Amino acid sequence: MSNDETFAAAYREHYWAVSRYVARRLDGRTSEVEEVVADVFTVAWRRRADLPPSPLPWLYGVARNCLANAVRGYGRRRRLVDRLGNDETAHGRHVVDSPDAEAPGAWVHDALARLSPADQEVLRLTAWEELGVDEVAVALGCGRRAAAMRLHRARRRLRAEIDRTQPAGAAAAAPTEEHRHG
Image (tube, rainbow, N blue to C red; front, top):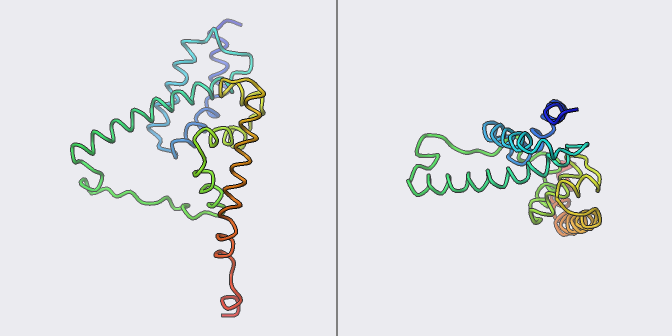
């Protein structure tokens, strides 16, 4: 199979997985997601000779780099808009929480958000993208043992974060005797 055919097969097979990966990290901002995914496959096209036999973890690694570049660019644009005094409310638009802001299990996402970006990424690669340790290593650009250790430590820190906050949150969420009998 030629490099062009390998690229085409990877694109067909993994486009939606890469799109979902990017969308979850950009909270579904559609135009930005499309830009980053296009960047991912542009890099893959340029480096099609380097595509491994199982390209998805490699594509996730490329996506991580493209996301980092995009986020830096969005931050620069946001700062420029702020300096110009054109905030979103000046144009009659208001930012509101998503309808599922208080979704069941939001406390897990809150605990995850309190972890370092590196811990969040290794946990997301295993939970959201369903990668095994070998594939996580490819996506993160490290060895298998390092990936396994990062995952172990991230899970331990997430558990500590959940344990630290859950007892108070669970007590607040549980109906009291007074509320049950109203």
